[in-house]
Amino acid sequence: MTYSVAVSGASGYAGGEILRLLASHPDIEIRTVTAHSNAGQPLVQHQPHLRSLAHLTLQDTTSETLAGHDIVFLALPHGHSGQYTDALGDTPLVIDAGADHRLTSPDSWDAFYGGDFHEPWAYGVPELLVGGLKQRETLRGASRIAAPGCNASTVSLSLAPGVAAGVIDPGDIVSVLAVGPSGAGKSLKTNLLGSEILGSANPYAVGGTHRHIPEIRQALAAASGLAADGIRISFTPVIVPMSRGILATSTAPIVGDVSDAEIRAAWENAYGDETFVQLLPEGHFPRTADVLGANTALIGLAIDRAANRVTVVTAVDNLVKGTAGAAIQSMNLALGLPESRALSVNGVAP
Image (cartoon, rainbow, N blue to C red; front, side, top):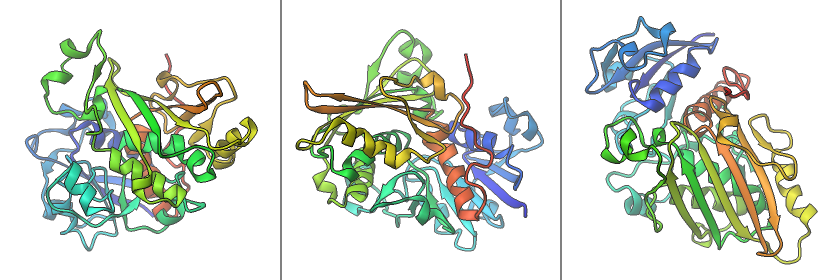
């Protein structure tokens, strides 16, 4: 069976990456692409690397344009998807790459986003632990999916095994992330100009203000069975001069007198049979270059007995495993297709 697809926000980074991956999917026909200010222009004018889609023209993003497809991807700014999802009730599968359907708490939405709160959907991180199972079980046959925030899923995948196994204390997590500016979207912003970021590292959303914090707390609470207010995290992202990628370094205290073997086993048991989340051998740590263009999250684990903390270093491509790849992996599960279809574990090098 071939599924017809519409992609909104198709002129942006997330929309473009969704299209790049879908273009090689044998079960998908990309029928419609939409935008706002760029409507009426050829898709390749904004995504010149998508040569196989040169026949497509960007249409206005309206509920009427998006309706009538088997699958709709929404790659819109946060707070903009809800107005369309409410009108797509007859669409068999809708996947939102924005934040509108990620959070379960209206209070968290009000505190970090504001505006209308929309119902939470199945969270699109298949490998994430949830109450002893994996999130993929919720995604099988789902009709509504919330793709993750890239920073949030990276930190959550980093720490969920240790939190779920009770070997690290989720009340004192510290995460510092080196992040490529593509994660901030394609709109023109002075702080994202090449002249501002080249040769510099720039922290942003410092001091507990980043919007992905409640998403991380929600995911780790689901993994551990704790309430979200039992998850305390100091989260600091830093823009660095690479177009894409996240390198997340997260630490948390070791609980009690658990052994090094028990600590490492928590991650081995969680990800030992996963294709796209891989724990590296002891003493090895990932680089963002190793995951460029791939749907993989590579994890390095260190046990710092002097500080009595575990350090987890995780690398992802923020536009693939962090966003578009996670969305398509979740789509495959929802449709009953092979989970890895149109997704690769191989990066691009050099």
